[in-house]
Every structure is written in structure tokens, then in C-alpha cells.
Image (tube, rainbow, N blue to C red; front, side, top):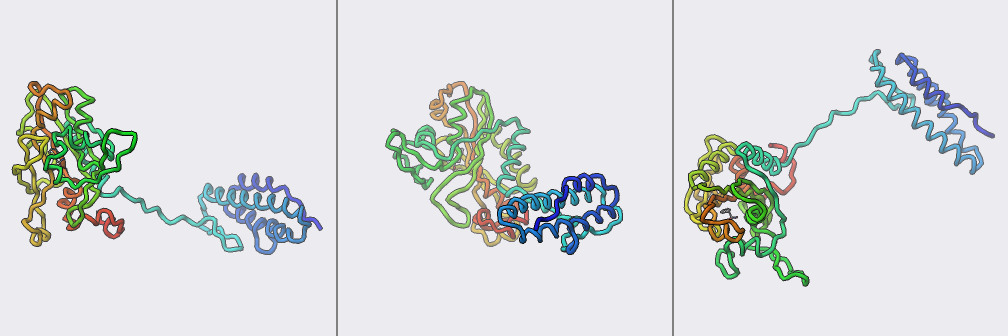
Length: 340
Ligand code: PHE
């Protein structure tokens, strides 16, 4: 026995020409009706065919089924379902059913904050550059005026990377974004101003430390750029990025690549502040770029001077949104992430 052969393509044409939902429903029924639908019957009869022919016919019928049901769904959409009637084939598939609305996601707090940083500093004329997360010992330490035996290295618990046999350099996971200062100064001529956001790594873990975190470095070099300029830029940024009433304090700090060096703390806001020891959180190191660092980048330290700073991004966001534990950023818990 052979199944009846139909010109399935002619149905596609009829569907395309359909001008009412009723006619379309009629064609749908004619093809896909549970008992008498032409395709339904043809598919059922496949089982009675000899193997060879069955295989060939199955391909043809399944192709027709897919094409025609898609054509019906599409036509139905174009007709706009004027009668408001649901187009249900007898096997219960409703090709007119609307998809549930998409719920769009949003950026994670950290990249969102970095975009904001780039925008705020962009308005102040700052360039943006990024550097690699695996750095040489030279860029991460030596050229920043931190020689091998310098005690300042202890302040940055470093992940060292096994030295490749082919290299005479030691490598680290960069402990701060400051090496990008060197990269920028080596490839640009002053005057300039730029920021360098990115990931940094230190062997540290508690509520305010994570082995991977984010910083953005700032650098501005000119003929007479001084500490007052630095404070003005930093205060503007803190107010724009956190809030206008953010409380902070500048105090002296030591970093071998700046002289003088300062640190900025911000006050915990809201209820959190009561339980926080000292109520202040260090968020940035800064100062005037040390002449040795300028010299290391072939910049004449008698002609040029300026400032650098390195903000801790997670800590700024913690203050901004009153987040008590920095580890929440990386746990991927939607209940946390959806709040922002
Ligand atoms: N790199 C320093 C740190 O990570 C911060 C800093 C940047 C300090 C620039 C001074 C100037 O602690």
C-alpha cells in the first residue's frame, strides 16, 4: 500500500494568501486535524510502508509538517488574530499563544560601577587604558620604586607565578593596577591624564579582603599638577560615584611610588557603622608620583610632575550600597544581585 501523495507546497501558498483567521483555522484543521488531518493520516500510514520507502517518505512528511505549521503560526501573527480566537489544532497545540515576557538582566555591580567610573572621569578629560593581569616583577614592583628586598613588598601578599624556563623575568598576578601607570607613561608623552581599571590579586580573604578584587588607578602628569589638583579630582569623583554627602578623610600613608603619600578612608554609612571597628574603611592610596618612577619611564622629573591614586572598587560599592561583606559580590546569589 502507498500513501496518497499531496502537493504540500501548494498548502504553503494557500496559507500565505489567507486573509481571515477562520480560513486559516480551516486549513490548519484540514492538515493537522487529529482524526482526518491529511498530514496526520499520512504520518500514521508511514508504518505500513516498506522500509526503504518509509524512510524517504518520513523525511518528506516531517519537513512538510514543520514548514506548514511554521507558515500557519507566522500567518496567524500577521493576521493579528482579529477575532481574538485561539488557533488550536486538535492535538492541543496553540500556535497563537504569546511567549511569556522576557525579563532582561542587568550588569553585575562591578562592571556597572566601572562604566560609571569611566564616564565620570571621561567628563574630566581622562583617557582609559587597561593592562594585563599577569605582570612582570619589574612592572609590578621594581619600576614602581619597590626593589626586591624592600619591606613594602610585604604589604602586598603576592601570588608568584612559576618562572618560565625561557624567561629571565619573574611573573606575578598583579597586586595592584599601578603597573599600568608605568605602561602608560612608557607609551605616552606628558601632559596626560588617564585611569586604569581592572582586576588585582592578593593572598587575603575576609569580610573586607578577597584574593581577587578590582581597582582603578588614576594618573595625571603636567607642568604644575599638585596635591590640590589631586584632592579636587578625587573629591569630585567620590561625590559623583558614591554620593554628595559621602564622608571621607585624607591622612598620610606610605607607598614607595609616591611622595608624599596619602590614604583616604570613608565612613561606613547607616546601621552598619555601629558594628564596624573604627567606622572608617580605607578605600584609596594616592600621592604625588615619585621622581624615581618618572625617571624609570624616561620622563624628565625636573620638568614634569603629577599625582596617582588607586581606588578599591569593591570597597567603594560597599560604602555606597551599605554592603557589609565583600564576598557577596562573587557568590552569584541572585537574591543579592537583584537588589541593585
Ligand atoms: N597601588 C596602591 C595599592 O594598591 C594604591 C596606590 C595607587 C597608592 C597609586 C598610591 C598611588 O595599595
